[in-house]
Image (cartoon, rainbow over all chains, first blue to last red; front, side):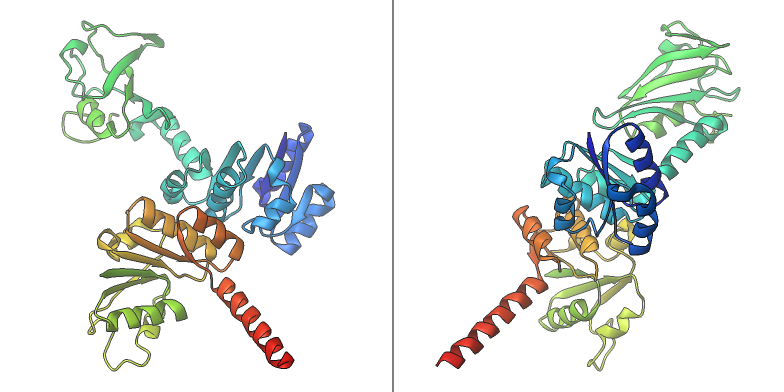
Length: 226
Length: 146
C-alpha cells in the first residue's frame, strides 16, 4: 500500500518506521524544518518537507495515488481538514485521524472524518475497565451501527440484586444479553435471578447508559455499582 | 439580523463595528480578551453600551459558541487568523447549528476555491489582492502604450 503520514512527531515517526518494516511505501510530511531535517537522517527520501494543509503539498507527495492517509499532527484542525480533503477531494479510500483533545471528537465526526483515534480516550477506556467501581464499562461501541455493549458489576446494594430478569423493566432500546457468574457466562432467561457479584452484559442504543445505570445501580440512588 | 463574528482582529472588529452601526445585533468571539479593545477604537462609548456582545473563547468550544449566541445567529463570519480554524468552525456553524448565512475567510486560494465548490461561502483576500494587482499591472501597461 502507498501510505501518506502527516506529522513527523513521535507518533508519525514511529508509525512510518513500522509501516516501512512491513514493506509499505510511505511518505511522511513534516512542516517544521528542524524536525524534518532530524527525521530525514533516518527516513531519507521517505520524508518530505511542507505544510500538508496546502493542497499542492499533498499533491506533490502523490496523494492522488495514495491508498491511505494518516494525519497525526499535534493540531486537531490540521488532522481534520487533511483527512477531509484526502477523502472528499482526492478520494483516498482509507483515512485515520488523530484526536489530540477528546472534546474535538464530535467535530471530526461532523466533518465525516472517521475513524479517529484519541490516546486520551483509549486510556480512559482502559481505566474504566481496570477499575470496575467506576461504574459502567464500555466493551464495544459500534458508531456506524449505533449500538454499544456495556458491562456492569452488580453490588449488594444494586436495585436488581435478587430480582428475576423477567421482572426487570429494561429501558427501551436495551437488552440484557449475558450474565457472568463465578467465572462462567450464560444467557439469562426470564427466570434467572440476579445475584450480587454478577457481571451483566447489555446491548444498548447509544445514549441509554444513564437509564441502565439508574436501573442497575445501588438502591440508595447513587450511580456506582461497587 | 443577529451576526456572530469569530475572530476579532482587524477584519473582524471593523466588520463588527460597521454592522452594529447599521443597526444589526453583533456578537464577537475571540480567544484573546485584549481584542475587545480593538472593537472600541474610534468609539466614544463602550462596545457593550452600544449594544454589542463579546465572548472570550474559541470557535471550537461548544460552550463558547453557545454563549456567543450561535443558535440564534442569522449570519456567521469566520475571520480568525487561521485558515484551518475558519474552515472547521464555518462547517460546524453550517452543519451543526444550521446558520443560514455562513462566510469563511480563507487566505489560501486553492482551498478557498475547493471549499467554495463544496458549498461553503468563502472570501479569499489573497485572490482579491492577486486580481487587483493583475488589474493594476495591465492598467499601467495600457497607459504606457497609449
